[in-house]
Length: 181
View 1: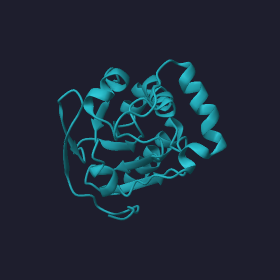
View 2: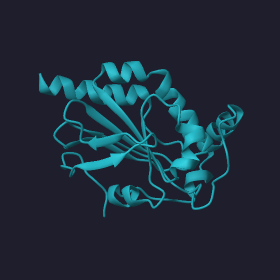
View 3: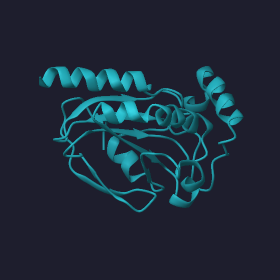
């Protein structure tokens, strides 16, 4: 499947989180920030998710449900994402990645910006090399999905540290709420 575009309507997804909870996208009550990360032990991904965790109350207050997808197994994700205060989904066969047009690239790790983030992530102690079936060449992607399934905004990353910040996400949600009022 190709890349998604703003304004496009997404068909309903019925998923299961790594904690066994059912998850429906779109969420009829909240916006969904669906983010695609790389592999479970990715130091860059885990560093980024800690920034999301620190500001999770702000994200929830803005009417956003956070969902992170990894191309890893549930077992591989548990040590790294099992304690996060938001939904995480295992997609080891990359079905969701294909559906949303999320790619891989050698630039995922070769871009200089990734080196600093990678070193900072390793320093937190929440890092590991890719496991069996995982790849360091995955690219991140972000999607902001309205309650009716309409894609409000998206970002396909060009390297491993190319994703929305919490401030970016809150700005996008704020812009949407002003359009609706």
